[in-house]
Length: 114
Length: 114
Image 1 (cartoon, one colour):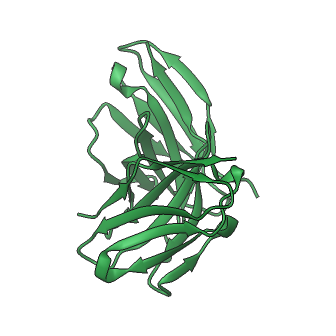
Image 2 (image 1 turned 30 degrees about the vertical axis):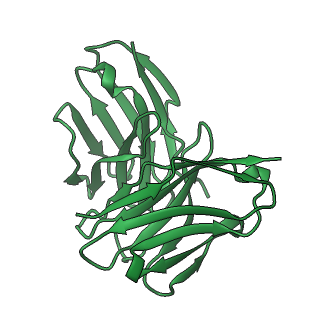
C-alpha cells in the first residue's frame, strides 16, 4: 500500500525566504504524487502533480517539486515566500487500484513571518 | 466553468441522528470521491462512485453510504452519528478516462456533532 510522510507539522519562514516542505513516499509501483494547498475554511487546491514525465515539476504560484526516486522524496519548494503562501500543505500519493484514490500525509502548516 | 460544489457548508447534528451531504462534480467529470478530514489531519478516503456504483471503499463502517445520480452528482449519508464523525467532508471529482487526471476538490461540508 502507498503512503506518504510529511516531516514537520509546522514550518515558519520569513517573507522572501526559501520555502521547503518535505514529503517522503512509500510505494510498490511507480507513484503518482501530488501537492495540494488548503486555505482556512476551504477545500484543497491542486498545486502540482508528478506523473513520471519529468522529475522537476512546476506548479502554480511559483511552487515546484522534485521527484527523487533514490530518496523516495517529493519535496515542495518556492524560492521566495509571500504572505499569501500561509496555508496548510498536503502531499498525496495516488493508489494503483481502479479508484486511484489519494492517500494524504498529515499536512504541514506554513507560517510566513513579516 | 463551475468547479465542485458541496452543500450545505455547515451542519450541526446530535448523536444518533442521520445526515445527507451533497456534491455536484466539476463540469465534464464523471467520478466522485468522498473524503473525511478530521481537525488537524489529512483527508481520509471514504469511497468513490463511478457509473452510479461504489467502485472502491476505504476503512469506514457501513454507517457511511452513498449514491451517485445519472447526472454524476452524489450524496454521502451517515447514519447513527457519533461524536467522532465531526469533521470536514470533502468531495472530489475527476475523469475516469486517462491515467493522469487529478482530483478537484470542493470547499467541503463542516459537520459538527453535539
